[in-house]
Image (cartoon, rainbow, N blue to C red; front, side):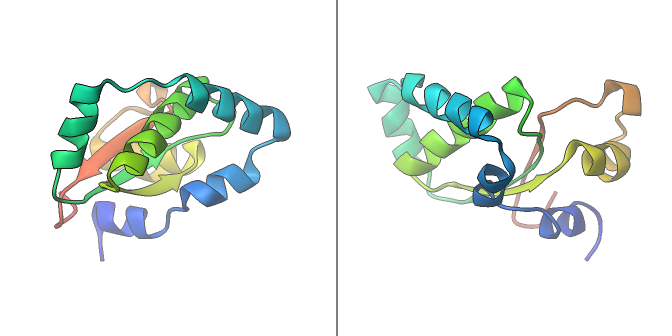
Length: 121
């Protein structure tokens, strides 16, 4: 195993992400979730997807953009479980993912997400 597949395999789940979030962060996640509205047209487009996509994302519980990203992914997966998420911290993102993606450390942000095909390309 090498490259993105190895980084992906060492990640943690969304449930683990929730487990490390503070009560305040969990409250913010739930508020975001309640406010996401997906149009009927987009719901139908999500339901039409017939393959899974692995997603490797560098996230942190304190990051509001990561919260929006993950909450949106959660909502989509409730309609049609199309995303398999593997999450890594910002630190691992900088030390492992940024170099692989050729992103300079100063330019690396959370969330950074990589959508992968079945061969982890």
